Each structure stands twice: as C-alpha cells, then as structure tokens.
Image 1 (cartoon, rainbow, N blue to C red):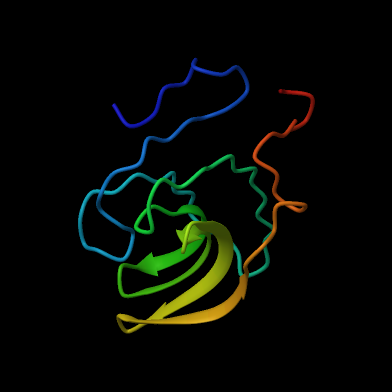
Image 2 (image 1 turned 30 degrees about the vertical axis):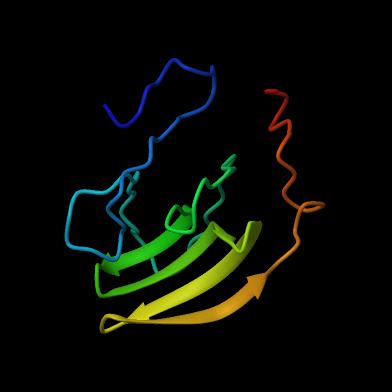
Length: 114
C-alpha cells in the first residue's frame, strides 16, 4: 500500500518509493487530469527528506520525458525547494530556494489540522 486514507484525518499520506516520476516506472503520485488550459492548483505538503534522492511536491505532467516539477528535496544536509523542467528527458533547474524554513516549517497547522 502506498497511501493510507485514515492515518491522519483530512489528509492523504503517500509513501515514497525509490522510483521517480522521471522514470517510466511505478512511482508514488496522485494524478488529476487537466481539463482546461486555465487552471489553479494548490497543495499542502509535509515532507522531511531523508536523503538527496527523495523529493515531494507538485508536478505538471505530460509524460516521464516532459514535465515541470515543483519539489522539496535535500541538498547538502539542508532542505531546499526547487523548480525543475524536464523537456525531452533533459532536466534543468529553473529556480530554487535554499533556506525556506520560515516559509515551510517542519511543524505546521494546515486548515486547522495539526
């Protein structure tokens, strides 16, 4: 099982897998089909990466070779937020924030849910 529905009321928990969304394999994600060119997307993420290969965030996904990732990751023992484009299989870091602890604290309350 990669997601329990009753572990924390009002939240969905996804368990990480070693596969990434950039691979043509079975990874952990929740997908929603985009039905319009104009849309808004919002999510809350609580994630503490244990190593530099683990990431979590929001992805605009066409396929494993073409997508845009907004993700939390670990780099040199520090949590980072970055935006990564993947076009024809080539990844490019588009933006990043190193110390965002004031913006995304480890302890949080989301819509009244501790």
